[in-house]
Length: 97
Image 1 (cartoon, rainbow, N blue to C red):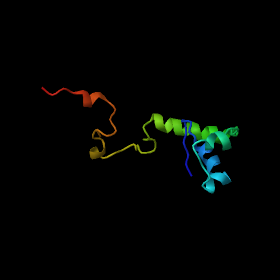
Image 2: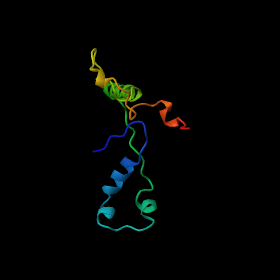
Image 3: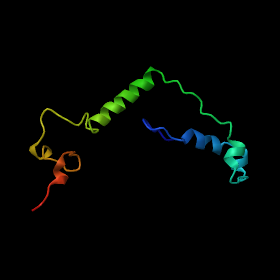
Image 4: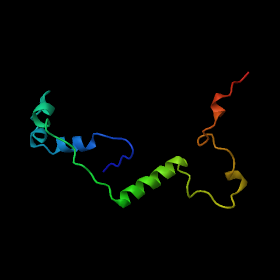
């Protein structure tokens, strides 16, 4: 199972192709999509309140770099050191002379 948020994908289309008996039987050609999938359209999906809430939380976490919940009031000094893998500043643009 795959969940992709924020980006439109062709996963529903690919799943529909996999359900076609001709495709499963290996009866495919270069015009398979025109002959078997020409009238296909995605089902309209209505999002309920929980879906919107999950999406909002995901967006919030992405905006924080996925760091929510990792912070504590007191952290040992070794945890406060800068981490270049999580630092989005311009340290990579420093010119050495």
